[in-house]
Length: 333
Image 1: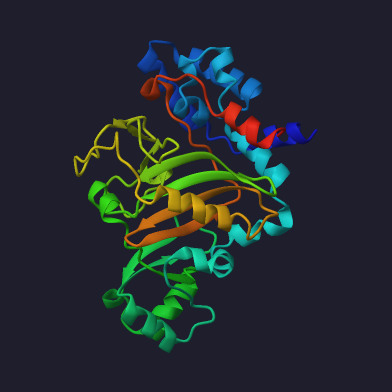
Image 2: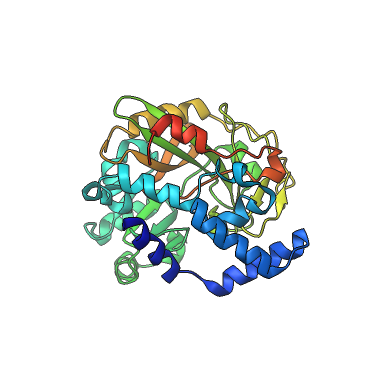
């Protein structure tokens, strides 16, 4: 019954127009009819729990039944989060203000909650950090986040009132990223999404993706960014791709190579996450966003309901998804 309710909830939120658009683009790409692609999308939704965006992103149209069954879909990620992340503790990650307070020693940046800060404290913060990011505590997918400067903020008291009115109650020091990542994609802070599972004793790293901005202030996939999967040493072995299925062996703005890029401080990132995962052990399955700093690493946020990151088979040449790795680490879900 729970699965039926889940499926009905997904149907109610389905963007039918966008599904048709995606099906039309896939049909043109592979020489099939749109109806044929739509019917296959429905079959994959029922059999594998794959949404139409999973179908497109992981190229199910190139895979047979056995290969499709090896890919993690949005349904699988939702099941793991529901089973292993205790509801009464999820807010400690979902609310960015609570997350910052709980994980402060891992952040690698200054921050301020304007709900409790005075105008004088905000003014002092802006003097020390002339470029900041303001955030709504429940922001997702890069929405509800703005880059601001002390100059445009003007009067601190008026700026504080503006932030409170807009819900941008978090003010954070703008992250200065490692020069290697800044050279690759300079406009955004380019982060890693590292998906982990804590079994009570050991942290399992299930997947690591390098997220890159295109020509915007954020690197989110749904906001024009791109990603590629990293190997166990933190090296990008394949091109990045964006939500429109465009692929990039080099960054489209800087021309710097993505394939072969080695993420600095990767081992340090994994060590930091091994500590961070033990702070709220009741939330065992997390997608961490991590920035690489010039002199360390900084956790940007932890997502208790993380989405999936897997490589396109056409780019990797591998038609096996992450299901075997997840099963080995987690077991049932």
